[in-house]
Amino acid sequence: MSPLLPGGNHDRTRRRDASTATSVASVTSKSSRVRVAKGAAIVGIGALVTGCAENAVQDTFQPAGTNAQEIDDLARPVFYIAGVVGVIVLGVVAYVVFRYRDRGQPIPEQTHGKPALEIALTILPALILIGVAIPTVGTIMALSETDDTECVVNVTGQQWWWEFDYPVQDGCLPGGITEPIVTSGQMVIPADMNVLIRGTSRDVIHSFWIPRLNGKRDMVPGRVHNLRMQANEPGIYAGQCAEFCGLSHANMRMEVAALTPDGFAEWVENQVADYTPPEEGTLAAEGEASFIANCARCHQVNGLEDDTGNLIVSRPDLQVYPGAAPNLTNLMTRNTFAGATWSMLRPGCRADVWEAPSDEFTDRYLEGVTPDCFAEIDMREWLRNAPAKKPMYADPEKLEPTDGLYRGMPYLALSEDQIDQLLAYLLELK
Ligand code: CUA
Image (cartoon, rainbow, N blue to C red; front, side, top):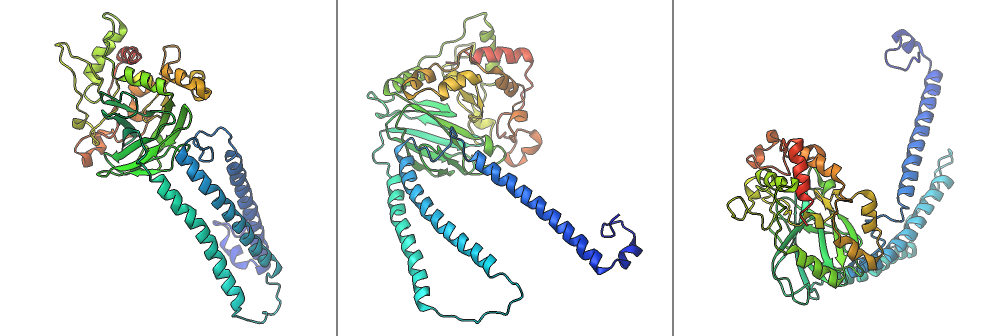
């Protein structure tokens, strides 16, 4: 046993000579250096390889809208200039470190005060910074422009999903929007139109970010922040909450689906269409009753009526801390759920939508979730025990600070029969 290891013989430890200690120490430091080098190589190669993904859905370097293009036009030259400066500085540092390292030579003659050099090294960085600052200020002003928007969507963040509501307005469509629409997870917009996002939050600060369409904008409780969103072509663009907002921050995603003008009109018409109850005697009809008993307290389905013919109005404000739960009217026209974290489409069907060429995208998106494409496993697990699938403060023991109000969907103790009924019902919400 090495005399240096803990638990070694104390007498021998005391008797060890200096040269043994030095050689053991140098072996240890060499092997630890090899370990550090191996670790650094793995991390470096990993970063390089993952940074090379060509079809990354959240790639700021593949702008698909005007604002993202402006950001790209600024970021690339700045990145290149900073890269050249970085390479020069690191190169000079590396050269000096190796060329002049201490080999026991005498300390060289000390000098100071080289005015020409000092003035040059002050002016050069100042010129570079001015060169970067002018286009940066211009870009910031261009990005904050919202006067040219033609369609309004209110975006509200909360733990841990995004709500999109379309107020009654003259914009978005030639005839405007005549009834409010509330949806979540996926924001549907007309392609090639400047959309005004009016963003806020119901609990903590979140940040709305669709990398291929625009930069980040914080969504702050009690304030409304504006952001312009525009997509050049029909397609679907992924995003992610970009401000740490609690337990399921990483599960707070969103997507923007940009449709052709006709496709958007069709989407709006379907969203405001009258509710069609499931046919009597079907599993879906049992599901509707089960939904009313278990889900309708929080989740609104517009047009849903109770036994006596009264409209059911959900009251999530009595159950959840932020005061809202996703409106599930026409759920199956979206294709993700629970903060856009899980797909409701099977992988092949999802690829048909995500990889559709832009002239075919609108039709594929408007198909929504069909029974053949429904990826029910995730939804089944969600209904069985939501907090086990996505970390949320839905544990009664952790609700003291919120006066017993949940953050996120609680465990509902549904039976497998009830889950079958609910799935059949949800599949008809379209
Ligand atoms: Cu919301 Cu992070």
